[in-house]
View 1 (cartoon, one colour):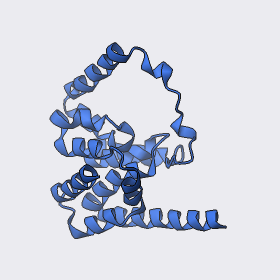
View 2: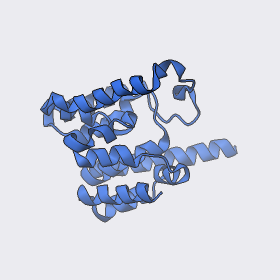
View 3: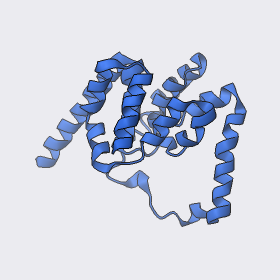
Length: 190
């Protein structure tokens, strides 16, 4: 848990998010879910902060959360993709054909929070804007809209970037997340 909180604090500081970003991130339902599960979502966020040379391997450790930033980095220098490509190839040497042994289908689970396929046009638009402006942070924000699976706690990194770089969007995003939680709790308690 210390790594999750520490990297979130570091990200808000490095991205100059200020008190508003801290308030939005640490009072959000997605942060509470991250605190509940204590998942490894600090890895891709730290990778995003570290940049293309040092952060690419961390960023692609959970590509569904912030991974589209790698596309902007690859646009700048395609060789940045060599590190994850070598790691991917090495995984087959170590574990054989592991994709054939995967039994878990996260796309059809109750905790899948992805707005797929409805979010794809918005994600493509944000990614296009990121590509034109050479903005890896905007590309990172587009990622969950393009993925068929993302858990709620994995959106915490997106909220950090939004609240630090795109405050108006962050406020709307924050309110929508809370509205969703309120509606779901009322629906479940019927």
